[in-house]
Length: 254
Image 1 (cartoon, helix red, strand yellow):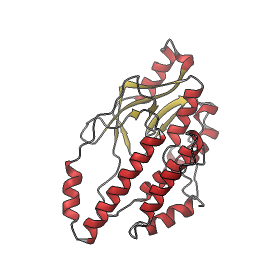
Image 2 (cartoon, one colour):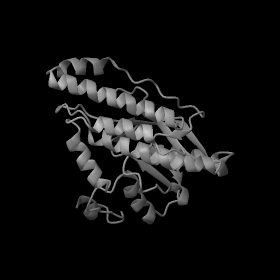
Image 3 (cartoon, one colour):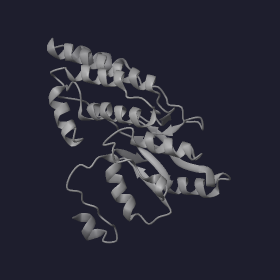
């Protein structure tokens, strides 16, 4: 209501349901009129004029015709560098990630069953997130901030509800020989996940990640993803997780 009243020039899109990350952004893309598109997560804080820095970088780059996407340096609330980008996932790396998720869920379930929540939180607190590789060597940019040309290349595959949609988009850029670069002058705080006070074993995001991982592997890695599906189904046998999976599968129409 405030936007309608105080900023009538803004085109306000009011979805009546959670459409998913890619689909919701595509709705904005349909009405966007600018030369560029800046996809920015709602849990971010811009520390400088990211839009102008991205715009100037692209406009003045010698290789601007071969640029596909730009991203900035992501920081946590304490201003430590966090995941800005990475190499494209392989089937092996996806299976490894999901195997680690399975083991984590088992460990958390044991802690919950045995009333050892404090033990888990102490173990979790000991883990520190490594600085990401933010040089020109990265293959895809984290989807929290993504600056692209306003054209068909900026459209997400709506088959991905949450996770892997930005990886899939940038893989298509790679196939068109368009680069993905981190602009180190851009600084953005990404607040990410808050503390889980209810000590849930698997979150809504966890299950979305698993489903999207299978979709990505089947679409882009030339595999039926049998091993990956097995790991996910094994994880979903956990009684602490079943309720969450039912909710997510309904949204995915599975």
